[in-house]
Amino acid sequence: MKPVPAVPTLPAAPFQASPTAPPVAAATPPSSTSGLIAALDWLDSLGAKGLDGQSLNEIGLRNGVLTVDDQRSNSQFTFQNISLGLRRPADGGVAFNVGEEGKNGWQLKVAVGAPSNGVRSIDISADRVPSNNLLLAARLKDFTYAADLPLSGELKGEIARDGLPTYFRGEISAGKGSVVDLKVPDAHLEAPNDSVPNWQLGLSGGNFLLAGEKGEDAVLFNRIAIRIRLDTDNRRVILTQCDISNGEIGIAGSGSLDYAGREARLTLGMAATPMPVSVLKRIWPVLVAPEVREWTIDRVDKGTLQQLDVAINAPTHTLVRGGPAIPDEGLSINFLASNVTVRPVDDMPSVRDGDMKGRISGRTVNVTVAQGAIDTPSGRKLTMSDFLFEVPDLVPKPSPARVKFRIEGPVPAAAEILQSDR
Image (cartoon, rainbow, N blue to C red; front, side, top):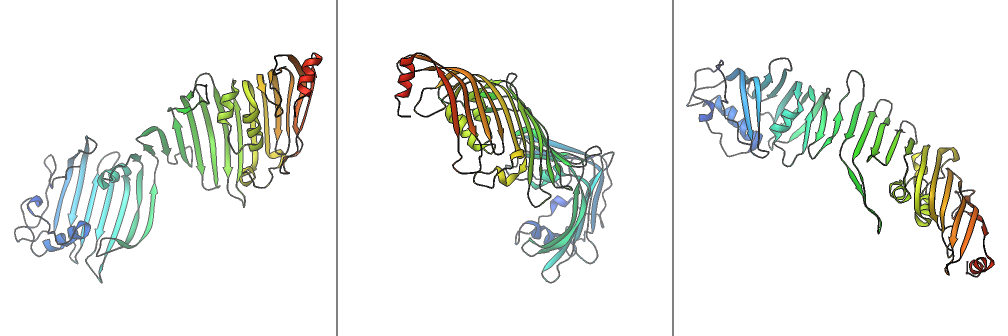
């Protein structure tokens, strides 16, 4: 950003000085110190030397136009109806104020006292100051956020000779507005407003890619709408909307995280449209029924998920692997899939073209396949029916599991299966 000249592009405006003096730009601060302290020391010296040997106590302008050319971002910013003042109180120090007149007017005042016992007092007051203006003035390197929030409040403290504060106290409040990551412009943070008394975080648009397994195409989700409300008064994080899709595959959900009590509790409901089983395995959250997730990933190879409903209402620490048991009523998963290929038992052929139905609670698992086909290693055919995979209790580790099924077909095919080690 180019240094702002002492007198920016302005219409005719009063210029207050006592006595009349050349433009401020004619004076150059000393270089014996640096930064804020150097500027303050220079302003203190104006009381004795002034400009060209004359004392300068006050300078100001009204209804000016300030233009800032930021060469870092190749952007130019123009501020209308700007008023500013710089005054040296009789007891030393400096008082500075800047503001904008009009409908969306704002004002910032900074008063720094004279040196006393190695420190200077500092008093900052803000009235609806746009946060974007402060970020622009701060010239933060590689800062990629825009914050359109009006800030009001007051801070009092002291700064030492090195320019660092020894203490600060006060209060700053942010009004209605938004915070946007310029690299991800579809994400935004909204301050409380007249209709919603909480901060809200939103994400819209954008896309994310799920990498495919070997031989499978990646899946792109390009329709995203997520809204989160931060209810700090009641200590809750509320997922008011979660819609993720690509026009063919979609997931929707809502829920909340309640951390008001001794144990944080997650409440979540989700549903999905039909999708390939391979996509389900990639999007299945690792914290939701991890044992069943592993069984599905390891043993279900192909098929189409027709229906999925997930409901969670449990303390968060029970959702972690190795943690306490999740209550039986704390988890409910119901799904229906068609044309699946499943490997129910190690060292035995897979079952294909089966219709699978599953019901999972916090403590139990029940997966059934009404009928499917088995191809033996030599190419013989068998029909499997009434397949049942059941875990009566997920609490013991390892969890007990039962597998039952009926096989029909030629005796040689059945004998081939019975001869396996399993």
